[in-house]
Amino acid sequence: MSTEGNRISATKPATARVFFALWPPAGLADSLGRVARDAAARFGGRATRPDSIHLTLAFLGNVPEMRLPALLATAAQVHGAAFALRLDRLDYWQRQQLLWAGCAKPTVSLSTLFSGLRQALDRAGFTAGRAGESYAPHVSLVRRVPAAALPACPLRLDELDWPCSQFVLVRSHPAAAGSDYRIIAEFPLTGDPGSTSDAHG
Image (cartoon, rainbow, N blue to C red; front, side):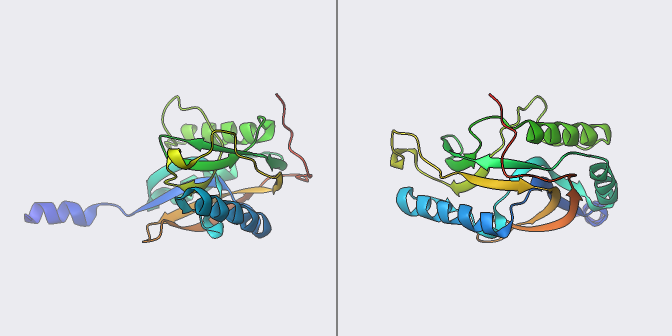
């Protein structure tokens, strides 16, 4: 490699692969982990580890580390009410070969949090997701599930309540068994999340 190439490589800024998410309490993560393991044993695929189960709000990808303080300040300006999600649906995306959990009905507070966060990121010059991409909230449970292994009837999920009192910024590190995640900042939501979701539909 030329001297010029080495100089360009040496001056390339360090980056962090980051995303914002809702992170479940340990008990809920364990419950979802059991669902994932049971489904993987039944249908095949790779179950998500309980310690990495989450619901993504905004994926930013590689962000220059020097911009992380600005990213933290931007997220701190996002205010929302605490709420509860009711996970009561299992579904499958064939293209991604992904089995996931979600809410059968839309959740107003989750949509409001997503919109407020996305707007704040846009104003601050951060790119999250693809332009015009609709938000499909989901919890990834099993990857690489062959479509042929799934039954024709809808899959069932016993209802699981998720009290959401904060959202987090997570840094992702590649690993042999899938990415390792580390929470690097927490952003509180106000009020009592209650026990049921504010779904409508």
